[in-house]
Image (tube, rainbow, N blue to C red; front, side, top):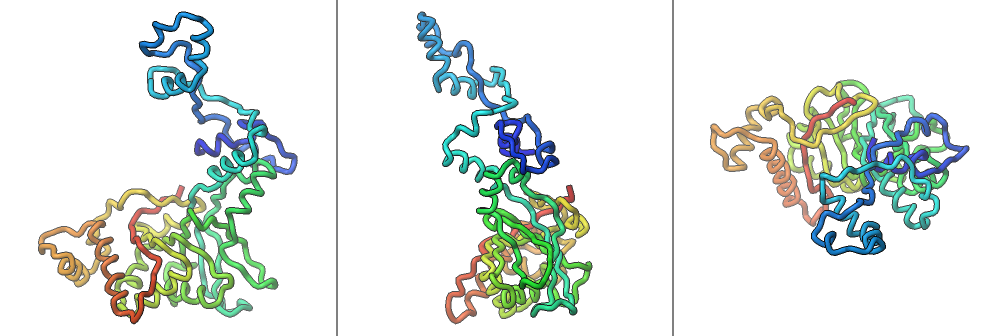
Length: 330
């Protein structure tokens, strides 16, 4: 569990709430936050000049001693198990702490499928595939109230349609889109355009992740098709598209983490021969040069710029980054 999650646990900050689920409270750790302790004697030349015990006590309890503690790795740092004074902090400060603890990025997995018997217009059905949720919201009423200010339902349905609620924090979460079967007849991009046209209010997905197999629908089409795709992504507020490389089964677990490093897999395993030639020609590469993931990202961004040039007016697309990573089922 992260340091923020530990620091805001009920056992650490001394809060209890009868309305909080017992399972959530007991699942939180009470260790892991290192808070500098007061040193006995600062390790500086000033130490020899301080003769008064009172002056030495004041010096040891000053911010100077904390700075000495942090910058001197030889000092022993003892973590606190509890912080019962949390409830006495000003409300503004408590809200800042809740906000930092709650505003932690997570992968929100969504499985979409086409259901012909669904009584709404699009026919698309969305169900959650991941179960990761910030446990901080279960600490007490105040934490839950702050969570409601950050988390929103990803999809809104008509009142008579009963579907699972998928919560998301749009500013920091990555929405991982997966089709119900390993081969979808209609395709990811058609689903996104239907989502924009038929769902109100329009979902907000700042960062979208899809499996690498959907890349041909993004970059293998003509510039006109690319224009339509990015018009839909602009309405969704998408700023980054992440292509997940590797076995798609790794994206379908209950807890999925997207790697922060570039894939170790060779790009030639996902690129067709004619596309390799186009990329090398566009980037002025030699025939024997190897296409890296950075080269592929540069080529993708150039394609976006070329698609902009055929538009009569500036489309003001929001996507500014294309990245590649691996997906791991935790």
